[in-house]
Length: 314
Image (cartoon, rainbow, N blue to C red; front, top):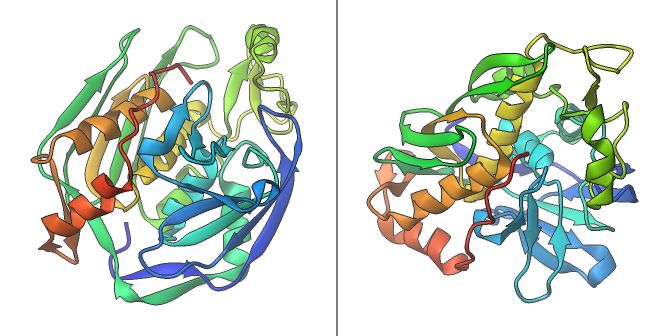
């Protein structure tokens, strides 16, 4: 993770696509924001209702991360790939305008968002970047052998293991020390994935209505159905790292921590952030190495107190 000054976009950039779960067309515009603003989604189709990109706004984690504002009930779904792109390239402050309830899925990875951000570039701002420093290990667990932990570290490091009973996946491990260069090279292009045998059930549940071989890796009985195949032998594990970067970005401020997970999911990631912020001895806010616990409390606790979403496989 880059240290130094906060950043935002130099200008606005627009992308269009479809929602992975809604199947509806979506127009999204990324725009600059002032210092200490964080990332906020704005629903232009709901009179400009704002939805902060924060862990305690998460209300659903079934196959994606969904945010909701408690007052307006405005929702924004599938935020994780965009949040990963913003965190991955080092954007602290941004306004994200949407004319629908879901971030466009694009090709199922973060790469299109990274490319869009790079077309306008980043602007350094007149305030130092702040970090959440994890001070002691925090661990959560879920069903089917799920577990995730945050531990003290001097940089943002991510590692995960997955294990699927499928001949083309099996057990995979992946790791990333988060820098813009490493994010672009190692995980940004890793696509979301699923299984052909589960498509009908997902659509019956109102999910994956916009899914296709153009925006997801779909596995049949023996391997991916996508004509181009996989982008990397461990693309699935890399995508789980991408999801973790995006979900952890909902802390609201970059973290200095080592994230490790076994069979991670969006629900598990949200529960991990809830456990971290529930323990005031487990973290503090630092600004270029200077601890400021009072600012930390203001940053997180005063923004609301929503319970974490129920753990769900994703």
